Image (cartoon, rainbow, N blue to C red):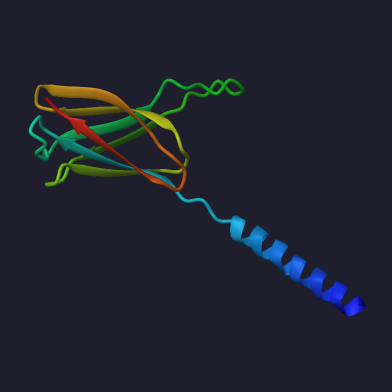
Length: 119
């Protein structure tokens, strides 16, 4: 009887520890992939993509968030950005006299994709 109780307890303990250890995973960066296309859905090479967050102020320290990342689109109209934390960022895309403003919501340990039509 005692050995059955000990076996049941051991199995239960191993199960709980396995679930707990499996749930503890390390987080990775919040990544963004921005694709810039024209009104005919063709990729735009050489567009400037700016992700920024400059309007958030820490209420405790008064320090202004100053997140800024600028990239130029590749031949496929893509830029890739990586940030340590998730955030909602302003997104500005421009090429020549064309300009579009939008936003992107980054999620921790995920790559978020956003397609922007520049017209």
